[in-house]
Length: 140
Image 1 (cartoon, helix red, strand yellow):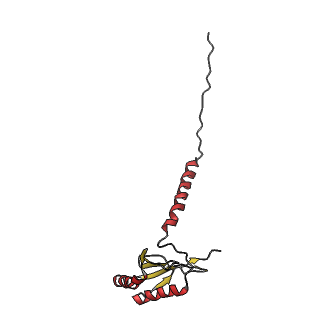
Image 2 (spheres, helix red, strand yellow):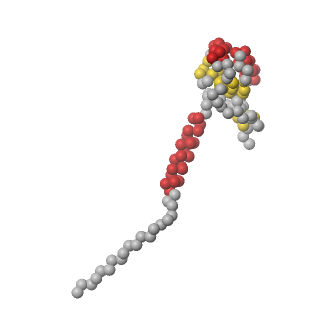
Image 3 (spheres, helix red, strand yellow):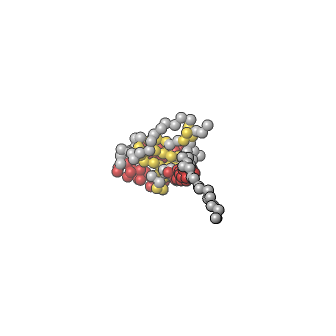
């Protein structure tokens, strides 16, 4: 008689643990995507804004025109470069088409105050009554 071979039977237990590795992978990919995309969401021309301790909060909306003046004095109206000799005419044209808009000025912090003041004066002469200056909150 031949001996019986008793094969051990494999018994698998049900595990109720959650495998978090795929979850961590997805979260890391989302984190990288947000880190790359967030700087691209900045609206307007890139300028170094002045810092204030407690800036007033004013949300961006469709009723705003954003103007930027860089350190070299170049002026942008809604991301479009405008030569200084055409600036008054451009502002008057924008005011004629949309007189109820507010103007937000992003001025480089290295500019002299007289340059920013002359731009604000041009905006007022074009007919805009609500003009603001964009600043950043001072880092601690």
